[in-house]
Image 1 (spheres, rainbow, N blue to C red):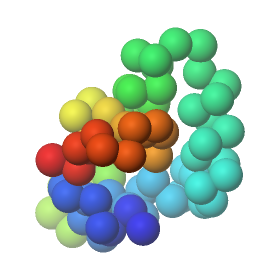
Image 2 (cartoon, rainbow, N blue to C red):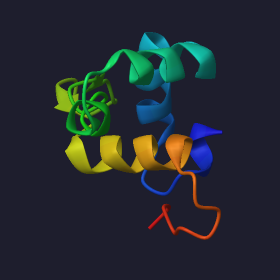
Image 3 (cartoon, one colour):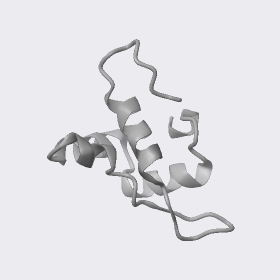
Amino acid sequence: MLLTISGITEYKAIAIVKKYPTITSLMNSYLECNDSKSKENMLADIIVDTESDNNKKLGKSLSNKIYRIFTVIDPNELVNQ
C-alpha cells in the first residue's frame, strides 16, 4: 500500500515497515502522539537506506503526506499530491 503513495520508493517503504511492520502499529503510534504536529512529523526522522545514500531521512513533507493519507476523514479531500 505504501508504494502507491506518490514519492514513496521501495527503499522508503522498507524503512517505514521496519519501524512499523503493520498498519495497526503505525496507527497506534499516531494515537500515542499528543498533538497533530507530532503526528505529522512522526515519520520524518526515519533513516532510508539506499544503494547510494545510507543516511537520508524520510523528511517532514512525506511524513505529513503519509499521516494525511492514513487519517483523512473527508473522502473528498485530495491528499496524495
